Image (tube, rainbow over all chains, first blue to last red; front, side, top):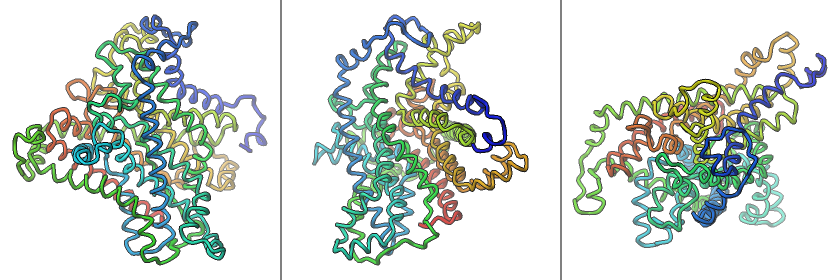
Length: 287
Length: 316
């Protein structure tokens, strides 16, 4: 801050910086421990070794979860579902946000309030009716029913859209109407404008809301557990991870290796887009 | 689920942003989203209410017994059971503690972040984002491992420095220590949202005001309390209510860390309770009734949220 440099003598390491670094270390520690435990040899894990490093790192735990337990398949399933949800929900939400911000029509406000209320619905409570709904849908379209990945895409699509609409709304509204008028004068139709001009302009918002859809879908364990009952090959990562939890005999090496595999894609995604994310959030706050 | 809602202000206080009055065109754009929401959200909500009025158990699911309409019997059974009230109290206390913890940690770090060198701030934000991004399932797993009775780092360390009582100590056996452990994990993964949002809010406070206060001799905590807090009230309110809604709905952490609700269900919260009633005990009617109660409670919180947005001048 400007005051600390002008008013006082500049210290090499102010207290605030030290405190913040300590906090950052504490916050990062569980993640470090996860990675470390995934790399530890089994003997160290079973002895409850508490040293904060290992001299004999090994990929044995990773090899076990990928080769023996088919994590690759589950990773692929999780990625497939998340990708489908991100693309579809972003498109649907973006179009809806356009309608809700750039047009004025009756029941617009009602719809907006409903979009907000829809985010508060405890989706866990809906597992019961959704379970029966998926059973019925599966009767006609098996690919969208229980035991299939389509069922998970459908539910997460529904849960991602309201928030995505809410978030994109601000970005769409921020595009000046002059841009639209100019486009119209140049002969662009309504849909051309939305697709070729508006969509690229709100890209930061799209990135920010796609992160939330991705994470919500990627992290889901409730619906995967409820809908994928017997189809082992359609299991997703969180459920696969849970199979390592055994009463009194947890395979911590496997659990941590699986956790690392499941955390890395999210982290990479987050770090790649964190600039957009913070500016997206900041933009939404500051207006 | 991570679905924060942030306030959006129209630049320049522009009134309703409607561009065109438009016939059927907006409905074409709305159609895909509305169809999905109607089928996957509105209809299930209706079904939830409906099932809660029936005697709906395994026998009815498999079709060996006919469905029986029992009106509000599921609700009377629920409100009359001691378990329900315990679970409701658990949920309230647990969510309240998580919200308080999240706001305290996130708020103080947001203030701290304004005093940092850029690279330290980036380091803090990156680690916070990492914690935020960590899936609930893996976050729960690693916290559980850290606090494992025999192999966990925490017990090993405590026993190593002389607290022998902690060798083999189970953190999830006692009700409140289990809630505390889950709560710590929840705060760990949800304070970043509060921190980032409040930090953005603080950045939008004009520099001159803070500068003036500092010249008058105000300390950082004093500035945070007497100047930033009042100016941040709108953002604070929204962050608070958003946290309440999240923490009230926590499912995964409780389910995984306490193994489905703790020793003899001592760590059940409403969401997990309803789920277990339906899918573990096959009491689909009763489970739905619990779902309805949860939904109504969240709806009440949402209405407060809407009022706050309105009072803050949010244009819908």
